[in-house]
Image (cartoon, rainbow, N blue to C red; front, side, top):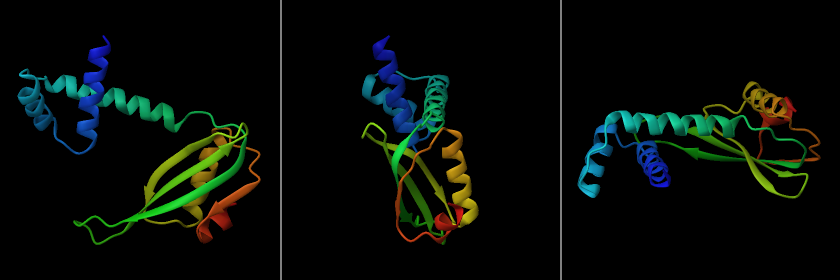
Length: 142
């Protein structure tokens, strides 16, 4: 049972890094001298999606502070830059927690209203300090 879960998570990790279902099957065939049915790869991905969805929607509660960091990427195959946003906070008990991670082409007020309202719906309250790089949209959305 434990081995099956480890195998499913390994398959999910390989797949999430962009390896196709077919290549995952080939890799496991070579490494383990056994094939993995495409259905098992798909099942592992569904489990990972469900786990990520639970994480994205978990309750937050009271925060002491809220931090936002932008990481810009420009994949070689596109002409557009995208901003990866990491939002973290210091919880009331002093623990640091990543609250949200996403990518967006814009950091305007509409984007930040969506982010903040999503965090508020998950129970975020009590924030006394907001730290970020220069985000006009965040200032307006607050």
